[in-house]
Image (tube, rainbow, N blue to C red):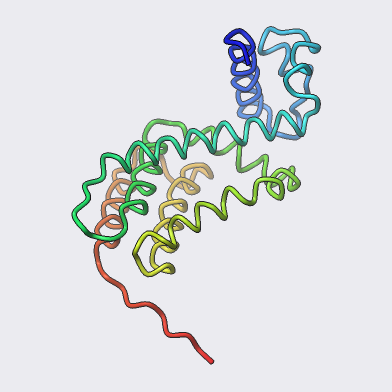
Length: 192
């Protein structure tokens, strides 16, 4: 893909995300996105043949952003021989997302997944991949998933308006989750 083509694609995805944030997934049309991106509809359909393809592109953009943030924080996470480095990086990435205001993009993503369930089905492997990374992070797998889910719950609270992103309790909850990631938890016994 050429630099110009990549720039156009990026511009279209940003416009689609803006339309999602302002109007919602149901109201998103290729015409609205083309207008917002200041490209012709033909220019848009050169990159994204359908609304579903465009929504998949937005999903991938948001997920890639979160993955990149997590990987960058993983590189900063000290290797002290304590399991849970990826889990802590993921928790920190969630907190950064909340505090930076990028949780608004997540609201659009969440709505898109609810109103367009086929998008979730097509990208289920992304979530399963995250769960695999958490479960193989050296912690009790259920403990790692519980910590990540609690962190995810914080941004969901912000998205739903239950609390403000600047609420100091959000950072305190994340500090607590990180501390809990350093506490060894026994593996659950397998019941027969």
